[in-house]
Image 1: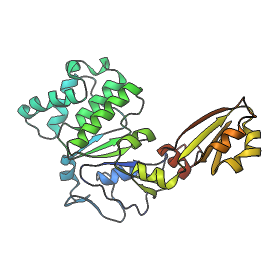
Image 2 (image 1 turned 90 degrees about the horizontal axis):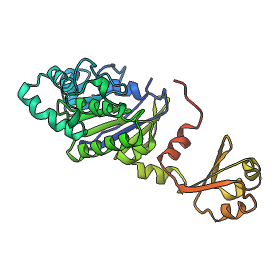
Image 3 (image 1 turned 90 degrees about the vertical axis):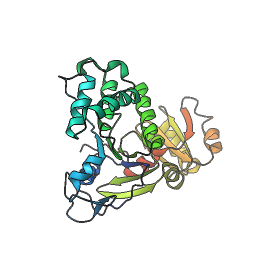
Image 4 (image 1 turned 60 degrees about the vertical axis):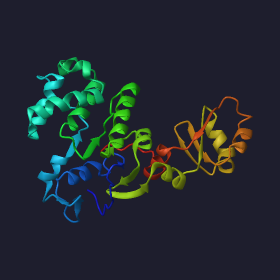
Length: 287
């Protein structure tokens, strides 16, 4: 269930829709695509209204679903050609467009391969190419890099950045905060169906969280917390044996750690994941 969501997505930007499991991301995407009708409110894409003009609008939208649903009976090229026919694209248009898309996602040498011959990363890249077959103005990406290794993830990130440079509008849902921080121009974080934060990644980090984080862990973490955490940290959290100490200056922390050589200490810059955890909590969501 979503309640009172209100946001604008500008043409040519990458817009992030973030939230824990069950926050309402999928419902929001279905409303935007006209697959679910909202009980109240107004959804507009350009001059079109959703769901009234949903059939027409979907011709301008590409969707990369979370789960790959490629046809295993067809080759890479055939998957794109068959999907393009759903949009009424002529054979001549597809003959020009398919090689360009395969080059974009780095699959030119796999054009005649069967789906079963592709790695997981290749399938995700093909799914991205398929979502672009109708040359959409808006691309909806639902967890585009789930299950991918770092190399494949970076290939997809590079492809998505090129799309925004070409003027495409991206709507991205992801559980990878690094992905959102790298790609999104603007994002909202939702929880329990409501927006709890909105802005650019950089602005949210600056506004919502202390600039530095010290992660301290080891058998004596609890003892160090009792004696020093309150006086050394602006704010802190303990998860298992790890202390997350949020601060602006680590001088006091380093001094207090001198008597605890067994503790491991890593200091880093605060990031979007720290913001997300602060706003939504560390507890596991099962739905």
